[in-house]
Image (cartoon, rainbow, N blue to C red):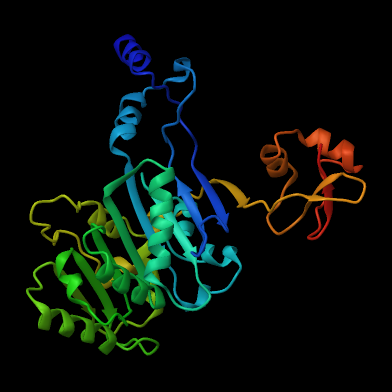
Length: 343
C-alpha cells in the first residue's frame, strides 16, 4: 500500500471512492436528448488527498487509464415524452435502483418521437469526453421502439459499438449490412401483437442478404408476448453477455454461452428481492444567462430542476447567502418563473 501511495504521488494522480450517482441531464448536449446518467461507484477523480485511498485503490487506478464500460438504454414508446421520471419505470436504471449491480456507466435518454441515431451518438460522444469511458466497451440495448433504435444505432456505428441486444423491435435504417460487423442478439416473442415478430424476421433477412451472419444470435421465444421481454433488463445474463465482447476483439466472435430462456424470464426479478438501494439522485440543468433588473440587480429565473443547492454551486455562492438576499429559507419551494437575486 505504501508503494502504491508513493506511485500516485509521483504520477501526480490522486483518487477518492465515490458513491453511485444518478443525474438527470437536461439541455446538456445541444441538439440531442435529455437523459439520465448513472455513474458507478469507485469513479476516479483528481485533486484529492491520497489519505482517502481505500482497499479498492488499485482497481480504481486502473480505471484512470482504461475507463469503464458504457451502456446505452433506449426505451420503448410507453416511456416517451418530456418527463425524465418516466424513464425510471422500467429498464436498466430502475433495475439498478432495485439492486442490480453494474460496474459501468449507463445512459438512459428520453425521446418524444422515435430514436435518431445521430442524436444518440452526440450524447455518447459528450459522455466519452467528460467521463472515463473504455471506448472498447460501448454497448446498446433497447426494447420495442428502443429495439428499433438499438438496431438502427448498431447499423450506423458498428465500428464503435462492441455489442448490442435488441428486444421485440425492428429497424428502419435503409442499410442494415453494418449489423453483421458486431455481436448482435435479437430476441422476440412469437405471440407479440404490438410489434409482430416479422419485424425482427425482416432484419435477419436483410442481414442474410448482405453477408455472413455468424455474429448474430436470434432467439424466437415460442408463445411469448411483447411485455415479458422487459424482464431482460433485470437479468445479469444480458449484461454479462454484453461485457463478454470488446470492440478490439480480433475476430469479434459472438458469445453463445449465455441463455435467456422462458423459465429464466419467469424468475427475472428473484435475485433482486430485498436488495433495493438508494442511489444519490441529482437533477441537473443548464443555466441560462442571468438577467439584470432595472435597479442593476442580477437575477436567475427559476426553471424545472433548479434547486438552491445547484444555484449556489453554479454561481459560486452559498445557500444561506441566497436565502438572505431573497428573504426565503432553505426549505422554501422554488416556483418556475420565480426571480432569485444573485450576489
